[in-house]
Length: 316
Image (tube, rainbow, N blue to C red; front, side):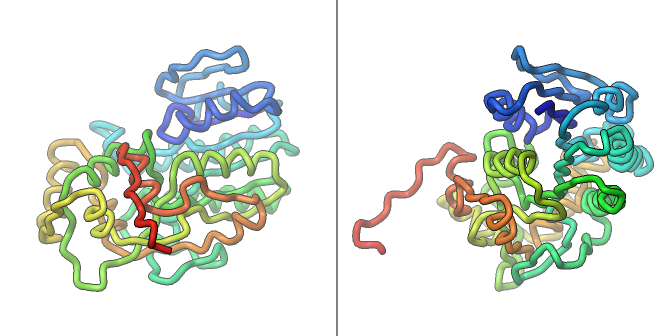
């Protein structure tokens, strides 16, 4: 199999590309990103540039499968253009459409979307749930629109799998997420604290690889088996975690993004303050997906190099 990967130098790509290069079923990996990819392998071909460039379309022709991950995750990555919604959407949606249009009709597509397309829910959502992203959360809104582009292609006969991972953690996680969890602070919200989930980058990569060699189509949720509030995650990682007023955290995020040009869109904080829980039984049934890191504490411990707490022998 010849596989094209877009967004290959991103957080998840740094895990996925080496995994595919060690898979004997993969004859060639074509890795595309605007950023450099520091890997060397006889079966790896690296392309640099914009996802909308003609070079991507040329590379897409003739591949057996594509993994689409190129996306503006943090708008601050656009620098002075961070408030340019038209540019972000041109990359997110224009790039998705350009890739699909260039693929061979018989090619396989694994599209990496996001759990954020659902918006919020305190009860586990299946893939049948409506996509209803939080108002003002541009990343999530663009993920919905990108999925709609893929769904239109599915109706035209494209074999496509749309993965919806929850918050992705691991050694290569977004610096914003790692930074937020390293600080012993959390927003003081009215009880009960909203439940969330996470998923390990290795488990997402495993689902992508399984999806490449599967006939499964449509959306698939990916998340840990349990759920935990952001406050509980902080308390697990820090002996002394402190609560701050939500307005203080939101103001700091707005100042950092709008005036200093750093950090994520302030709307990202909304996703940590609202419940979102997924039902991942379809991924287990269709892909045989079994997370290597099934519990949230497993993911947190591995992400931050913590040893798992010793269990009491009497604990059952």
